[in-house]
Image 1 (cartoon, rainbow, N blue to C red):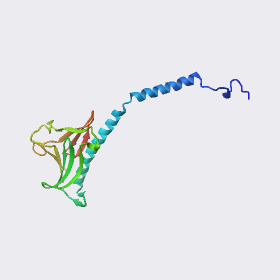
Image 2 (image 1 turned 90 degrees about the horizontal axis):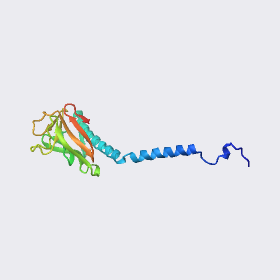
Image 3 (image 1 turned 45 degrees about the vertical axis):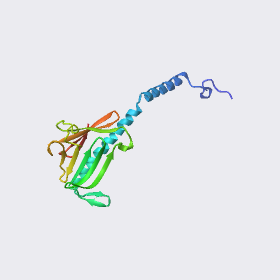
Image 4 (image 1 turned 180 degrees about the vertical axis):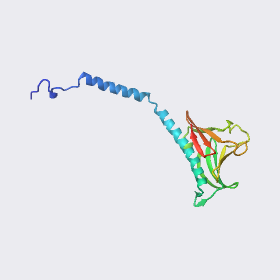
Length: 190
């Protein structure tokens, strides 16, 4: 079969310009892939998941206390007089109280958080800048959410003197500051 000299059937190979464009695109994609730090992105996502989980625990318990509908603990519904969230470097524990007696236990996150090493919760502080973990009279920082929705903190100062309590939330080298405003039960991430 005979083809015309300039017909589309007579071209059997790519032109030099087409090859150069393809090589340039492949080069750009390879540079982008090698410069992208997948581990840093994963670390940031894991830290954000940790921050979200802690914030959800605080918000859930604050809503539970202010709604007055009680909480399901095992096979019963209880109406605690207060909820205490205890934050330490090793765990976050939720206890339901009637007066000074624990009547139930809620969400608990324990180290290793999410069954993986690298998560850290530390740097607890009050709104006046005092480190809560450096105070010898304070074993563990604790937030107490009362029935009326007010939030107070135990420590070396009297209850209700600190407006905000905060903590550092880490995953490897990636850090966020989580603050709880007791006036509104608002959780802020910085």
